[in-house]
Amino acid sequence: MRILASDLNPEDSYKLMTGVVVPRPIAWITSQGDSGVINAAPFSCYTIVAHKPPLIGVNIGSRAGVRKDTARNIQERKEFVVNIADENLLLPMHESAAEYEPDVSEVELLGLEAVASDLISVPRLAQAPVSLECKLHSVTPYGETGAEFYVGEVVAIHVRDDVIDDGKIDSAKLRPVCRLAGPNYASLGDIITLKPIKQTERTVVAT
Ligand SMILES: Cc1cc2nc3c(=O)[nH]c(=O)nc-3n(C[C@H](O)[C@H](O)[C@H](O)COP(=O)(O)O)c2cc1C
Image 1 (tube, helix red, strand yellow):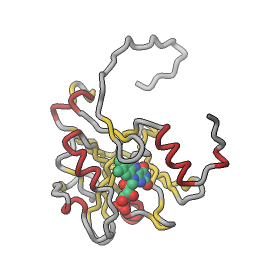
Image 2 (tube, protein in one colour):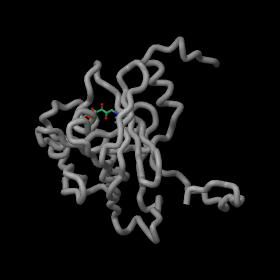
Image 3 (cartoon, helix red, strand yellow):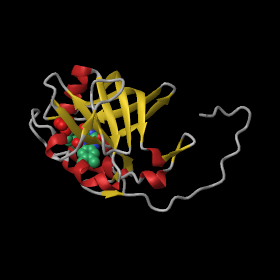
Image 4 (cartoon, helix red, strand yellow):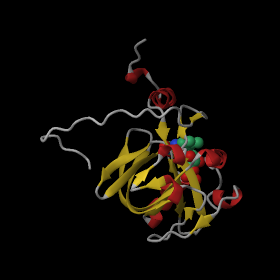
């Protein structure tokens, strides 16, 4: 089957693209606006943008042309935390995506614990095995439906001691969950380790 992108309406295009680009890692973002309410919501259009300084990017869509709470909070405070959900946190992470009024804290509602961050004013999630404290780097609008790509500079990284060894994260111990299309998730299957590719002198490597 061949599908022309120009024939797709926004909903069908969303359905198709979120089924094609899988699995996606999930940024479970805590943010806080001027009101002080701690917001938590998951975002799977999420990636590394640079590694020195570490920059991560998250695509936040709009709701009927209005910024989601997370986007509005980041605009207000210029800070946010990306928390990683492991298998134990799948359900509260999923439930935190429900549309709550801006004055409702998903953190309180879902029985999660927020702890103070070190370098920013927005708290992180105590139960998360990894949390990245981020300062807003830039916001770029894309497309026709009000999506914005938020890039954050990671200024502090919290990692639970048992999932890191010699500066490397052990994925098997981290047990992250990822998103497929719709309300479908996956955990890690088999981890396949291959021989590292030999780099030539001319290859620019990310060390
Ligand atoms: C696993 C998962 C991943 C999601 N990824 C995104 C995403 O990348 N971008 C987006 O705009 N919304 C995404 N959503 C939807 C938001 O989480 C949802 O709109 C949420 O209500 C936003 O909360 P907020 O208004 O408190 O910011 C995702 C939902 C789930 C369950």
